[in-house]
Image 1 (cartoon, rainbow, N blue to C red):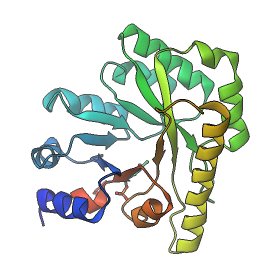
Image 2: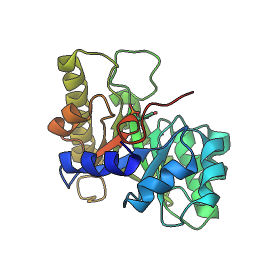
Image 3: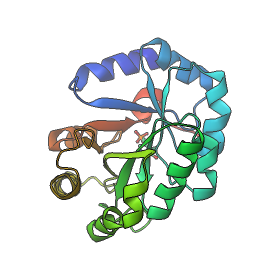
Image 4: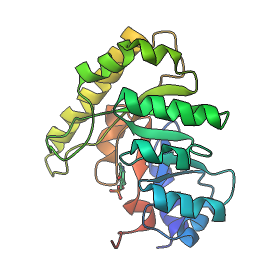
Length: 222
Ligand SMILES: *Cc1c(COP(=O)(O)O)cnc(C)c1O
């Protein structure tokens, strides 16, 4: 099947209220263009160099999401155009995103990444670290970033109960942050969880944003 067919049949299986981030990492611009022509507007990349090479060649109304680990010194390269950064895990990174967003006269949406998987290789905060960021006085002066929710990656496993519990944990973190820090902020509403292998569980558990690569673009050849 082609990308267009993959995308359209995939969209048929998910609720309209769930946003799809089409993860185009390692895929050529022709593949992105095919999904774009089928109506997709949100794309996710995880490498700054790849992203900055692709963007000038592609339509201007694409919403680009950065889903990888963000290095502070590379924020300036994507600040002119990035819509959302999914994997924020420090106040230092938030300050840099704010600084570069301000330079570009923009606001950049951010998600706090939580460590919910058992794998130690996956990045992210625990709950206490997240509250430290949000209680930091520095945070209140960051007017060019907007924290719009949370992000997490489940363990890569066949144990669906485990994945389910990890996603429940992320939803729990979201609710606690909402109550304690974002009670009257309607913009704090996103729970980015679910990939090709676990998006059904993620949607059942309350995901608002799924990040799907393989099921749309096919396997990646690294
Ligand atoms: C690659 C990647 C995805 C998409 O993975 P698939 O299994 O191909 O759907 C989602 N989220 C992140 C953070 C990724 O790096």
